[in-house]
Length: 95
Image (cartoon, rainbow, N blue to C red; front, side, top):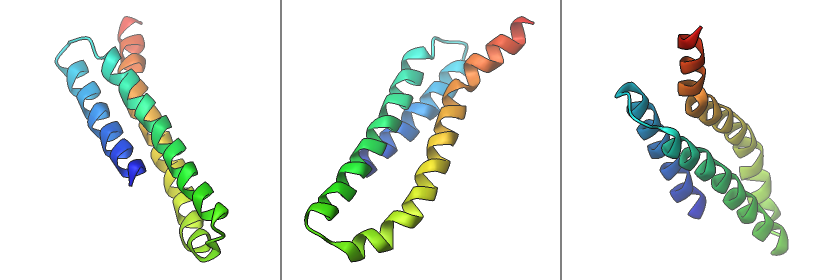
């Protein structure tokens, strides 16, 4: 459940980051928060799987981990790209 809270917070912070950039305001704190909560989401998911291993809940691991692996890779890459997009756009604009 904690990974969902962190994930939603990361998404909200990313949208705030992009909106602040569009408005011409300082977006770097929102970017840092978005990336930080992305990392916390991954840690929370890892902790969840670790608990399943400790209690030997192999069926949960077999059911959830393969799909979550792909989802976490995809969402992490998207989060990184969206959060650094304003920096890349600023660099492009300076040239």
